[in-house]
Image 1: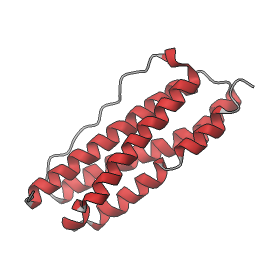
Image 2 (image 1 turned 45 degrees about the vertical axis):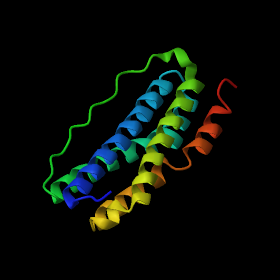
Image 3 (image 1 turned 30 degrees about the vertical axis):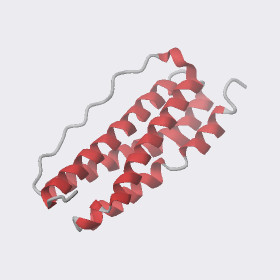
Image 4 (image 1 turned 45 degrees about the horizontal axis):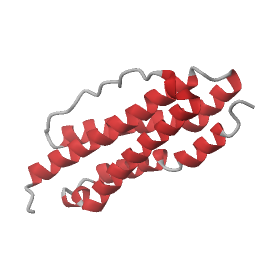
Length: 152
């Protein structure tokens, strides 16, 4: 399938938005999990999981806005996801957050593999994608370390 540059840029924006939305879900789930933990466990969750995901979300939104601005495309206002019902328990919330972060990473992998960021010649976009992927990567292992000590 042949793309015009405008179509490719719009596809990049749409894909970035989808990844940012998944990261926002992870952030909401981690926020809810935080509320159910004692002070020590909450601090660990914040340091190991919440802060990297919060940074990834902020970076993804900035990449989206910057790319749209550089190419004179309409930006997007990102909405916070609806609060999550705590029925899954803390471990379930953390596991769901990891899954959302992994979905975001998968979306970004597909975007990088598509070569669209290279084809549109946007170095800032490519660097930003790598940064976001680094922030969401490895979350499962860090989450395992946090959850293995819950309830002890």
